[in-house]
Length: 328
Image (spheres, rainbow, N blue to C red):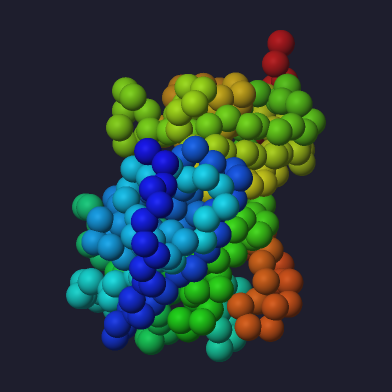
């Protein structure tokens, strides 16, 4: 249902260790449920968490208490009172950590493939988060004490550049940039079939797969969440291609799902790839690498670009695929 006219109630001031997120919802969210719109704008928090906060009275829209099912008109101001982080203990662990840049506000790292970003089901430790608390100690925990300073994620088998906040100020500023989609991201992927268009736009909504609940899929019209990716070919191989991908949105497995949808899945992808296809044997893992990240420094405002060099396993796989015979 649409918003009802009710008495404006100021959102309570954040209590100790709480923080306040303020944002505006635009026309692109008109007609969407509030919980879905917030999940879109605040990807660092799950929809389940945001729904719980709404029900707990932690979310006000234009000064009014909200409900998860309320529909967005497209011009609302939203305030979210984020509770203190859970008391999850995160064990500091000395793990390899390749630092590309660091100052008092941020640290930029080159995540290796095979490293999970934060603890989860079946992965209690041995994660990037464990390495961060060992190497950097006092990190902000606004997204949860098991996710210190983390404002975005990469899949376990995806390598490449990530930015981590070192202060509460940096975490708030970076989270806002990711939510407002002002961070420019460039990935490099190796895909099946060399006949992919030289460049293209992929505008397909993404939602949970109906047959494999741990996977994502292109959604039916009117379902799922908007997702947009542009790409261009960097190099054509005899049977494959190396492409640069620029996701404008940050959906789970977005690049992987989108490339599969246009008939060019990523080589080595266990979920959306082509098992047994020519070239799969050359892939030691998912051939997807977060190459560049462009953002505004959280305190200086300077636009900065950070790059993670292409790892040896990616370069080796490309050269192995380059040695294949062309398609007959």
